[in-house]
Figure (cartoon, one colour):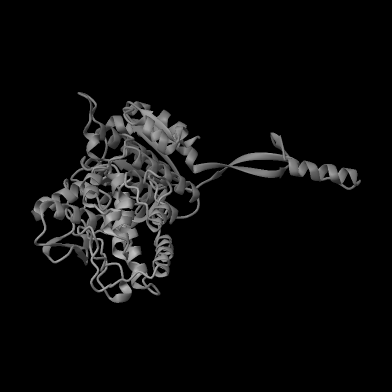
Length: 515
């Protein structure tokens, strides 16, 4: 049973926390889910899904300082309802698992524990209309709409405020409550011992993901991999999920041979002309003696001086000059499983085209003396976004990167937003000149733990906006036109160029860098 439940949870959220069937009531300790031994299969399934929703959506703990037992119970119920609402929005089928287990009605009575059960049903079942004023108030505080689709309470402080208001109402009603004997109902919900650090209870620890499909036997241990956490934009709730994605950076496998064939080297030579514009950026010089257009500020000063019968300054022009620049370029290569798409008998796969284009671009940058880095990326869920470093910014005389680039193998998915944030962070840490991040991809953001086709597109677009605020420009080369429309939603129409053949690369690069 535990194996089946673990596989099911992996399919839902790409995480498989340890399961223990050894408790009296469902509870969470150190990231492990403990289920009652006497429960049925449906109860185990509902309890495991609810507890995992806490591990996915809940904060690590809540601040219980100053909260009485009644307010804590209400706050725990609201957090239960919040994570279930988020889970149902992402995976609507979970509603059919949880809603039938909520059976409270007004016939249950008006005691505090009965009102808690009635409120719990009111927050998960849009068809249940409870006549009690306190239950109605809880529902109005929790949701922005009658369809139970837009939660108003999203942060621990907002939940605490609502729980305090509802708890004070219970106090005014003088309803009795014994916290020592209270057990959350329906019984599939955990006992919330993880929530309260002030009571020295166990807290939720987001479990490290177990190996996923596509993991190779020669992957290094986590201790040997540099990992960084990044947020992710959730378009369904219109907020950032902090520390949501884990990106691991590791060196690409060594290759026996390096170099490039004649066709790639020829394209690399043709690329030097459009890429040379990166090394010389236009600068506008004001108050010049000669130029093509007037400097309006200087012209106003000239006219003021003339009217005051003073000697005017004749430097009233603006001029554009090319100044040497010291650009940084990051080539980010998508080598997800979708890049195995064949492009024809002579052209090979999409990954072959991506690698050839990256090689030609890198060779041209190397010849021009531009500092650049090359990395491939793929993902296996939000916990496992992998960045393989083909070439770092240093040393600049690396001659083996072309072989490592050809050694990249297709696999995994394309969590583009996390990869963009990682590349942006690396570029933003180095200098303040021109910084360019070039994505070579099929333009289709996808991952195994995301079912909404627009979710990762919206997050990647958000990552592009974040990069722009850090003065990092992001552009995309889309191959074979498969995902050009989605790529334009991410990078904008001016930040995307489609290429169907390696010979189209110089013209596509020219359009991107001259924009």
